[in-house]
Image (cartoon, rainbow, N blue to C red; front, side):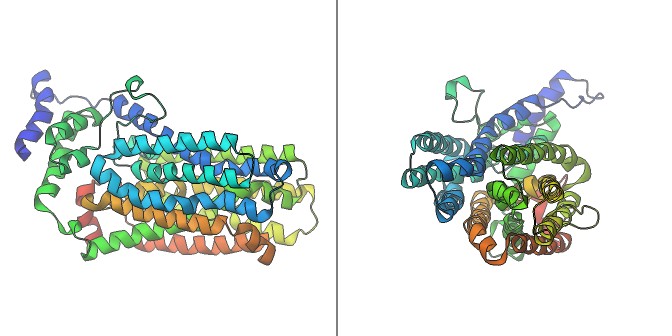
Length: 442
């Protein structure tokens, strides 16, 4: 399909239904939003399977007699197991599309969850975690975002109309693949249909299609992995993915019961309640990021988040205060418990309003069109590898240098992350994938 005819096909409804002098009012794109939320069920399943160890470890130690080393393996090995499917997911998404990759991801996630419910020992649970990790690896790459910004947080826009595979396909809304993947595959007509349904106006859909077709036809410098612009983008993606996990977020999520016990909480009920509160604060903060991302911008949120996680004066109750509390008060008291609990909640909130949700969104926004899936796979591999190293060594490191030492280390890394964001990451709000070469060439 020619570039002009494709754009005309998208804008035809606008011309035929409205007077030429009266532009159509932007409509709320409920179709794109609902599909993005449905696809986000994949990442919910993935996050559940990654984080369920946090509360479960309290009871697995007692019921199954697991050692610290076995708890570390069960908590962190999934991130290492994921590497195989993460690296394969980019190839699968380019070959079969993100919709098919999401279906495969959910099949593994469902099978792994069922296997874990039946596991009665360390070996069985490890095998079940391996199956789950295959699905999590496919999911985290296949759900990297490319839809309009309202749906970015679900990390589902790579396949903006893909239903969760845990639901029967015929009971789900109409499914479609990424318009960019369709256009790159020579299926311009289907790309037009997807863009018409996922854009706020037909004119916006026409503009987006023109950009995609132009990038496909001309093949800018971003199409070459050896170009300076591409190397800069990939370096930024890999560094951002590293800092995302170097914040120690998974140490908090997976081992928050140990942190709270260290502060003096002795009751399992109290520890579990505090752990649940962490999850609630994390979720609420992500909704804040959803509201602010397109109003404030990605860069300000990333700067505020990295500085806040480190514990700067504007947001003092985070990693630095947590480490200081654990190192200063050797005898647990009510004050110690309260200070530790407040620091953990503040840290999780700071992480979740910027660095948490925006790492994947920002990475997907800047990666070159022709290498997006593979680039996302490589970036996610760095993310998961960093997470695996930290989560599989946290208990051992805490026994060696103290739990406070672990959090002082993470705070220092977040100061470096703040400098990195300030120096290397430009604002991408309002930019399309096709004009990233202009942004990163300046």
